[in-house]
Length: 144
Length: 144
DNA sequence: GTCGTATTTTGAATGACTCAAAACATGAGG
DNA sequence: CCTCATGTTTTGAGTCATTCAAAATACGAC
Image (cartoon, rainbow over all chains, first blue to last red; front, side, top):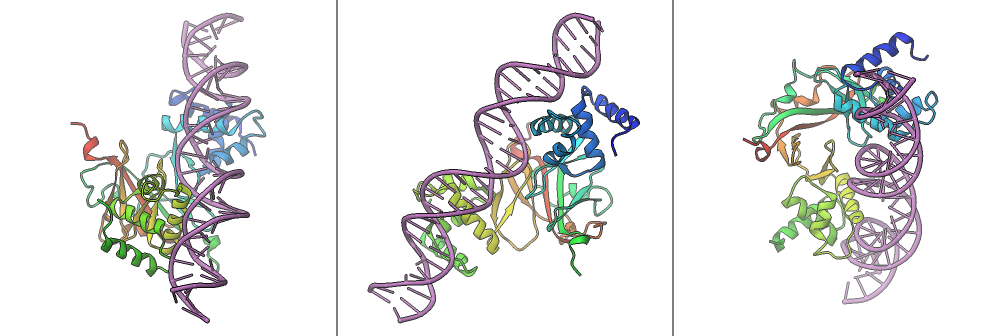
């Protein structure tokens, strides 16, 4: 149910590895995202508030900002949804969101490696990254 | 500089054609978006406030909501930016945003027709639409 | 164990947008 | 052309997600 010692150590290592101090709130936040990817700040706060009384949503935002900046987390911002966070993998994967219930799943790039980084015409822009979100109905919300 | 009669009539027609009543604020908002695509509610309000004193940002939001719902406008929501609006064209084009100055340009689909609507694995989702935003540096912000 | 600095706490403030009730204008019908 | 019902806008308040700032605190290098 709760984090075992091994996991906690691994989480602490990840945090240390990007040059950040290891603190209780940070380990707790990373742990929650580990077990539930694509979660927003509010729900992270709800998950840790029992084990860390005295924490606030603002604190969670602070931790998330530090992690995102350090490259430990990836922040995704689908339309009509608060920002969601996931542990960063180096691949360039995208997301599919259920327009009915909001469920989010990972989706690999359609063709081989990041075709989405090569738009046909970039109007002179130097393309650095792409943000791709698919919308549809998840299996549960497809009635029939 | 300002809308001539012909344009105003054309705008009114577009509005009527989707079954909405033609009102001053609506014509004004559509006119602004016509000449400056990818604009947000606040800036639309700034553009029309002189010619329509007594208008408010909320009113603009109301007009935009009505237009979006009627399919007259497309609403795009890039990360770190308020919602932007553009006159809807039926093609499935995407956008490229300058990470420095925020400039937005249209981008056609990378390969032929909407390849972005066919992710490799949809995890059982019924894909309905895709939201694709590229990020990079616009010509102006590329120093050197 | 001590101490400087990074981090968290606490509380307030912002930006973008939505909601609701009252005043008003559009355009269909007479 | 005038009237009236209904669709729109106005006005004002309220919400949600997030950020900012100052004070209190904890991490971990020494």
